[in-house]
Image (tube, rainbow, N blue to C red; front, side, top):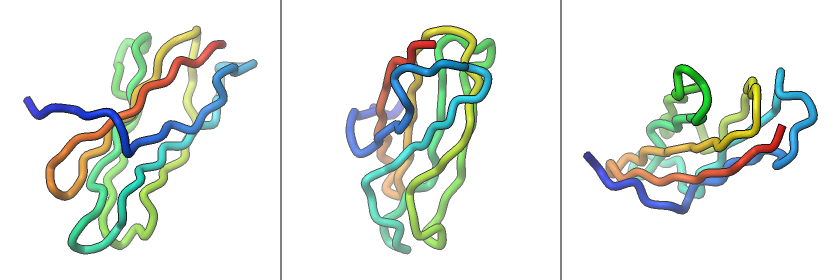
Length: 100
């Protein structure tokens, strides 16, 4: 029920992936990682996966960085989305299209 605003989140993945079996991607949130203000969670979603929730990363002030890196399997051209929840409860997002 919370609004998701665009911004603060950046998905780092090549727009053209030759082999979708293992595509490298990262998600960066432009927000400090301090005890008072930090990123709580980063969720990665894709539109064509039977289970659209690909991964959820739980972070805290001790992480020191608000960046996560992973590999993702993509069968066909599709949109990826990332949503970050900050310690103040706000939600921020980014969306990209990846061509396989």
